[in-house]
Image 1 (cartoon, helix red, strand yellow):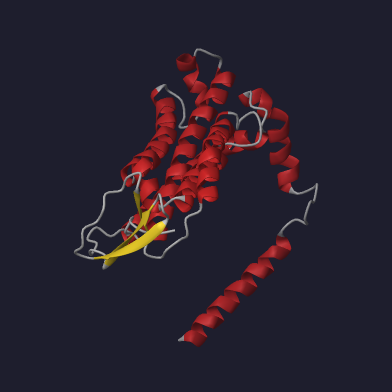
Image 2: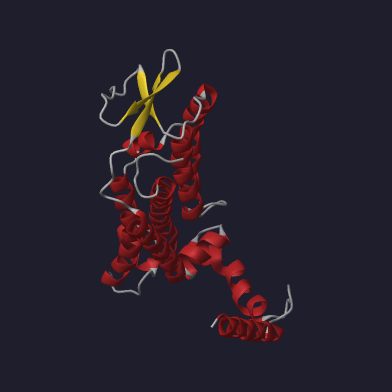
Length: 276
């Protein structure tokens, strides 16, 4: 059976290689893309959308359907990871580790013992002990707000400079992951919980889809942002620019929440208790 599978893979690979001979040469100025599609985007983007960033205009406007389904794929990946990894019935751990913060002493309490409450004096740590790093914790706590502020800038200004929803969402999600790594997973889930991440991911997809649906309600095509001009109080061209910002916000929320949710489940094997 394995031999048959190898033969099928080999034949299919040879077929794909054969098809590449019909592709245009690399950087061929006479290729269909270079003679029809690219020149139009480069020359007409600012006129059509009032967006200087050609890449963002293509992703969120000209190629809006594809980007919408990319966002849906991200949402689907989160749901698949959640269904495969999430554990609702978690056995009581055989022991817990705590750190006495004033002295730095760590101690282990077996199951059934009396656990101290987490406070300014006691901090629960993972069984796979990670040394306390005051420099790491303090540095991350100081820089995370600036990272998140930059992420918001990337999303809000992504249609006028390099950036956008995907990039800003990744930076926002990474800021929460950095907090989880520098502190612990429980502290991160306490601030951005599993339910909040799920709601934000769903909200991001909804914002994108609802924007297209609103265009249809106003008598135009799905994701044809010019129809939103009466709502924004602008001309159709500027309405496309404003709508691109709206859908970028939706993409940013979905990507951020997806990263956080995936990290929570993968790092803790679905337990959301102890993990990297």
